[in-house]
Amino acid sequence: MARTVDVAGLVDRALAGEPRAVARLISLVETASPVLPEVARALAPHTGRAWVVGLTGAPGVGKSTTTSALVGALRARGQRVGVLAVDPSSPFSGGALLGDRVRMGAHATDPGVFIRSMATRGHLGGLSWATPQALRVLDAAGCDVVLVETVGVGQSEVEVVSLADTVAVLIAPGSGDGVQAAKAGILEIADVFVVNKSDRDGADATARDLKHMISLGRRDRAPTWRPPVVKAVASSGVGVDAVVGALDAHLAWMVEHGERDRRRARRAAGEVEAIAVERVRSRFGGLRGGAALDVLAKRVVAGELDPYAAADLLVDGVG
Amino acid sequence: MARTVDVAGLVDRALAGEPRAVARLISLVETASPVLPEVARALAPHTGRAWVVGLTGAPGVGKSTTTSALVGALRARGQRVGVLAVDPSSPFSGGALLGDRVRMGAHATDPGVFIRSMATRGHLGGLSWATPQALRVLDAAGCDVVLVETVGVGQSEVEVVSLADTVAVLIAPGSGDGVQAAKAGILEIADVFVVNKSDRDGADATARDLKHMISLGRRDRAPTWRPPVVKAVASSGVGVDAVVGALDAHLAWMVEHGERDRRRARRAAGEVEAIAVERVRSRFGGLRGGAALDVLAKRVVAGELDPYAAADLLVDGVG
Image 1 (cartoon, rainbow over the protein chains, first blue to last red):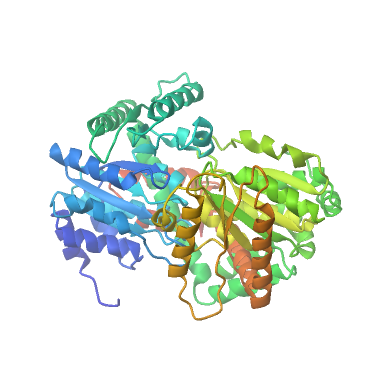
Image 2 (image 1 turned 60 degrees about the vertical axis):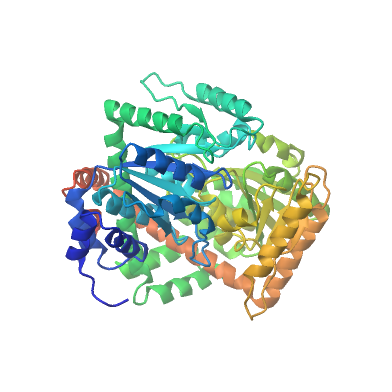
């Protein structure tokens, strides 16, 4: 782990699109390597091109299959595609469960596709901290589009919105009525709805419910984007072109209305803040911080100290 | 909003179990009132009794109904019960969608039950920051048990584990095979599995799959807790006593093995750290921080600055 990293060489090779260099850089992100600031500095001038599309939805809705179908459609029109599969990762194992990554096998040998799974390690700010940096790597490596797929449930579903230019939310027929969708907070994060597995019963009803909920929820006077609802069967390719068309339309709308720039500025602000917070937090855990936190926590459990007073002692001890 | 709060009086009334005072204190938590440190100090000596039970699961699995059924069972044996329904809350609305709160109506007039919904506002650390403090209020107000229910999908599903003494994960029959459960990272966070709506097809298969996955996942030599899988139909009350029995057994096991104290110390450490981070973060947003962050973010988007360098400028500007 302590071997030195030839950052300049690695970045040059990644900029040339060499898959192993890209993979290595993302590994550096994932392991929070101390050379990351150097990597980020070298990548910065080469970023800002990629269109980031987030895919989210409940487990079993077919996110991996849809991602794979979208990769095929985007490749067919000559775009370079990155796929970042973000794992919720148990706070205990820190590991990734990626049995279904094999479904992406068809694209695994295509040099125009980078596929990468990334565990967010369950720590606070995991996704918001690491994912934008991995996106930056794929962006600099020449990806025209990066698909960010959240795997399973977890803290990532809502956070993905802050990372993506365009968010596609996948819904399975009959998986929940409009109220469930509303409860999940997804009506407001979706730029495009995909009713996947729409050869199943209830697909039309689900699409209708979604459209109804969307029509209720949007009352702004300003010209706003109304999320289209597209039916698809990703496993057989039905409707995939329509999904791509809906995503394209959203990108065009964003560019026209300055929304893409706004989202990117917001994303960068979130990223900068997350790194800054992480830096401060690491000081809490450093040198005497870890032990101090444990001692303070025990006093809080015993009722001797309230958590605010404990936090003050922690911050003061750092400052 | 600027009116002064009689913290001492409010806390005294909450300690006496007065519902309006409890509600008011939780509102102070939710709105991040500046008097919270004072509240926390006054509550500290009266905390540490309540058993915190987290309930989680995918939308539509029946969390609200199960929570309501558990309240009934716990009340029947004379325990005071708090219910905290935590909303994922869209980052855009900041609001709570609680149409189904009405299902708790049966308990709404019971003086031995506190029911409270809380939006976590979608900000980083939302749940981890606010929920433990609301738990502290309910604990000090004399709740023997506090049920924490996460509403819908979102960042809260996995985080709830860090808040609870005991975590119950609800699964619907046929809602996903073992692989989906594993993908969701729930095998490792569950202390008790409840196969709800078990009058539906596939309940036995789902329970069997879960037991199989559990048997595969636990290979530790140390005496460990093996999560029981309980079938229930919360809406009709079937199996609810068995769920309570499983939860009780987990509590007894925790106490016997010192696990409850370990979880509480971990929870307090997380809480102290979250407050400390929030304090530091608020400095980023204060005075010149907000504008500074926006300016830095724009420079990052333009590729003039990398996010690490921007974070350093932000932290240095604060320090």
